[in-house]
Length: 396
Ligand SMILES: Nc1ncnc2c1ncn2[C@@H]1O[C@H](COP(=O)(O)OP(=O)(O)O)[C@@H](O)[C@H]1O
Ligand SMILES: CC(=O)OP(=O)(O)O
Ligand SMILES: [Mg+2]
Image (cartoon, rainbow, N blue to C red; front, side, top):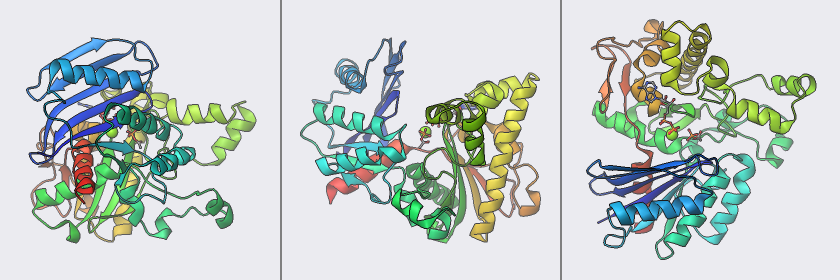
């Protein structure tokens, strides 16, 4: 059996999943939250859905790993009876160096560390997770699956910023794009749902989670995406601003007394729907807007307006559009956001059927029959995709 432990180690959380790649089944999932930021909490769910929860403070990623191992030992499934074949790690920034899943060696770790300058919020945490996991599972291969890899097919015109070319090259300033594992998985699932080969489809995938990005997928390849050198560019997110006139940064440094760390904190942690509408969680924002909160209403409108702009731009870049695909926490669950983001695009053949645009479930169509462009909701599964890619690399 091909059982893979998938580790998604964020700056303050550890998400994990034990995946049976053959049956595409999650044998266990878990989450350790608020690492180093008490009060912390953790939960572990087995294949039957039974969940064990604990409130506890978790000082670092090593402690989070220790909690995970204890949870497996006490609540199952036993990692001793059925040890994982390999451990797959989500790594956010792979730069221009990593364009495929890669077996982790000392050199790969040095590279991931060195790429931290291009993803200071993400890569250090990813590396901490790798080090802790190697300590816990020293005798199995560890594989890094990069968020940036899927976007390495973007043409130079899409990834190049119009700044001094020499400065850009020296400092590796270009668009890399993120959420690639999700965009890749979702574009293939969408093609399967439509019963057509991904090679002949032109898709726009909208990954709307805490982080959010749009991707134009042409024939199964990423040709354009909204996140840039870091996961700050593009769409409005939970706490991140997305697109901004770069002169705003200069202005704030000159006039608002903010230093580099202050601007970083403002744009990454105190902006987006949190900064605008007072709620970083879309459920809370929608509820506030529905109860008449004008700030929340504006935040929602800005969020949807930005998505609409990207859909238009990417349709133009693709030259034809077969489907718009919503995914991730907001995209899969927030029907009012989906309807609003695509409102007014009927002329482009993009329509949402209010009767179909409800509820939860698997891959589904929310456009009316006969619409020129299909609008789909397709649940993402980054962990399954990481597990599959891990097995592929280990099997080579
Ligand atoms: N029913 C829902 N309605 C609106 N938003 C939802 C719903 N369920 C989840 N979300 C939103 O999804 C977002 C989290 O998405 P998710 O993909 O889980 O994020 P991440 O993996 O980036 O942490 C949150 O903003 C959350 O409010
Ligand atoms: C790259 C990125 O933004 O990831 P997340 O959505 O998990 O924050
Ligand atoms: Mg996510």
